[in-house]
Image: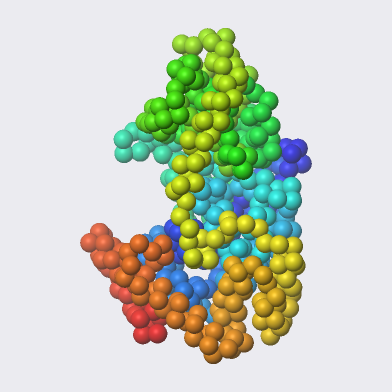
Length: 469
């Protein structure tokens, strides 16, 4: 991508809770900028709460959203809002999509929203688009260009990077924190500071916003510098030592601060125990999630170890490169363990990554959106992907339940009720029981009448919308 002509989309979501699969977006804000981060367009939308979701009391308390406001019929439904968002972002493409902690949270919320509304969930990293995260940009700047961004000291003295405190500390008046558009503006302010005062860090992070360019970097360079934010920030010389057998975005690197010779002769059992331990030399890199990774030739001096010569680092990297057995063993140990830990789920929200839809189903989903609602039941019946069938049926139930048979409506209603009233504490979504438990904790930590008034309003609203019904 050419930085001189690159557009950026900065976006943020405010949601019903922290679960990226079982909560929903309530507010979305985005600003399209040019390569100098000057605003070109902006878009903002709020939507109604869906019938099967109980919002987290704590989330509403933070975002200052009234529970009753989520059922304001003047707002678009969740489906209507997600269709508009998808159209806007598609029209702004190609661009690099950036948020604050977006790769871990907002990106997943957006993907899940598009998936659940039968739209392409991968628009931010297909069609020439890239993905970045300004939180990672802040971490990288703190490590690679100290002083450009002033972090906020945490309780133990380590730097913290929460947007609501970092933005004011670095010159942005952020009185409306946790409003989507205000958070987007704060994010752009911080990004522009790096672009202007540490352009080398900006360019480096722009490179790793592309999976293809990150993989190229890993393939071309025998010694790289990998950085992370923990414990005030760290940097390590690394070399590639393995990869996922099926997903090239998952790569493994070896910390060259450690001598690899002791690992090369280990049995598989010994190696497995060692690299799963506390001081493992192996780190996993997600090439599609903007790692803080740069060539050793471009790394600042303070990120390169002084107690190991460059010649020794080269020798260690070559040792690993020449040991195919070691790389195969490391890959098997790391990724077979992960495969054993994967839990299968019958919940359609959990099945987002269970494969791509066929071309036929993709065409039918486009037809679903362009058809009149009365005709969408017919489109639903032609879908072959069971996930899409279930999601399409649920969308019709939410938008026009009268189009479904009495039997289907009753079955979906019963499923929603069972979700809400279950006493199983192991479920991944919010239930009436877990909501009351959270309200109890909020009462114990309440600071004054304002907090108690919020809890009272929430309890009354909950009784009307979820218990009496």
